[in-house]
Length: 147
Image (cartoon, rainbow, N blue to C red):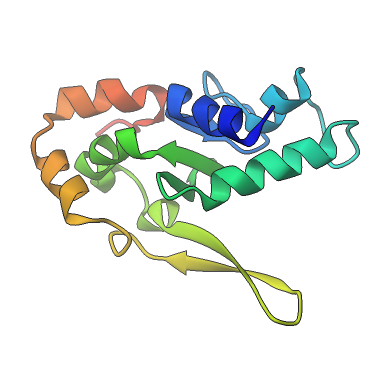
């Protein structure tokens, strides 16, 4: 899977887990591997491709990296951000924090969290006001906890 294909996969599905499957939510690692993975993907023959695809997706400006689903790394494409904002009160705020990997000069990585709603732009907030609850629920599907 090329970087462009990885981004298209996230855009097409809207919500994608980095490496775990849950219900109807696809896994990027499984898509790159071409099979359902069990256990750690690092040892898989396509482990380097999975890593490369996940880094490209994590760095894309139109992908929210958060822990929305089961506290696992979740990718949410920008087309679903208004629905997510419309129903944000259904989720713990920590699950909506934007995660960003920061690479230090010493080579170490750390994860920076931008709390919700600090990462939102005005366009997304305005779009969220234009969506009714039913439309937002339809867009997010199985993710929406009951009211």
